Length: 252
Image 1: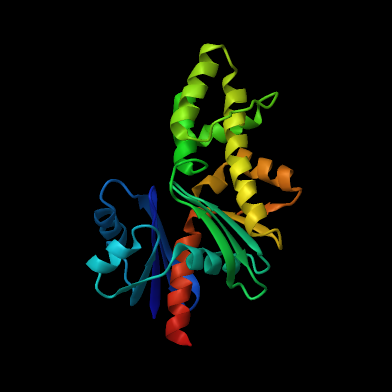
Image 2 (image 1 turned 90 degrees about the vertical axis):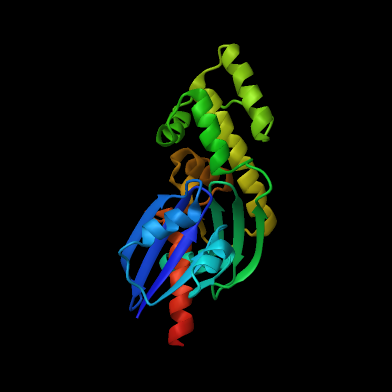
């Protein structure tokens, strides 16, 4: 039997197919303005017996694909993370338009979580907008911030107000890399606050697209004085978790 997990996020869609507990197929694409059309494209040519959806578009997917099931992002990420990090106690997931911290018990079950999905503050969208305003690519934004010679404080986490603050700093001749570092520090401050409120136990695993940002990873590690673990493809964790949950339901 082949079990597929699809994570329909605000920015990207990931697909993982398992057979006998092993990944035999994985794909990724941009969500675009029509997530169901993009989901159909990513599934084109893929064979599977059962499929489970997660992410913000999971309920719409279930309506269109009658034979599908759904699972929350919280449960999917918990399952996906524990597949690679058996001792993980805390998950930090920062995606395109939300961020979350999940505390796990010794058996990998969700104990507590906190989620920010009401504004773009501290999310991938915030980082994307600020990178563009400063003339950096997404991939180059984190490395540039790491090169800053000093920290710079950004007072606002609201995307609109932060844009105005950045514009003002640029007009005053502020260093782009120092401004970039200040923006990264503001994202990290919010993430640390969530982690401290939800969990401080066990190894911390960072998932989601923002986990690729080297400056965010380093600043969080420094602030907590702990190592941050990241899978080689942190955006696939949700889809993998959905596939694993589906496989488990059908083999137990």
